Image (tube, rainbow, N blue to C red; front, side):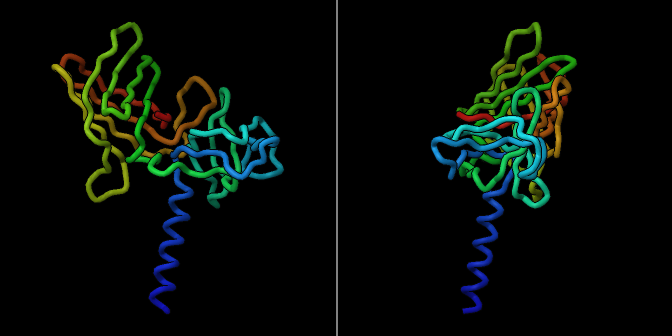
Length: 203
């Protein structure tokens, strides 16, 4: 009986942890078809409403959780807000390092780097032609939960992307906040080291 209780407790805790992970993609659940889920300025029911989510909204990136793990932060418009996790269900396999697609970006200069589900990575910067590379699986660092590392290579070019959870990574251009910071190093025909933010995107 005691062993069964411990097993149940461990399973329940693991489930709760998986259901409250960020960043990850979530779907709205449990909201009536003629209703909506409020997005609020702060993680509390009495905070100002700044937007809504449709009752069938999917692929919502929750970039951070409040201290109690009851509200999730998401980007809306040019800023960010909070929605109750009571009405949001995490998509299995959508958190790092299992997320199928991730897009990273930065400013000064403007650059972007995206790794898609087919393990194709694309580097682009303002005024230059995009470059395509083949990427391996995204993985955690050895003996650690994070950061997450993605290595890619192409003709005369190699890329190492390191993504680290951050409470509030800013793109420097808006009030939107992201849950992953990025450091990208390119070597070969392009020699660059840039920093920025990353977001999880649906595939």
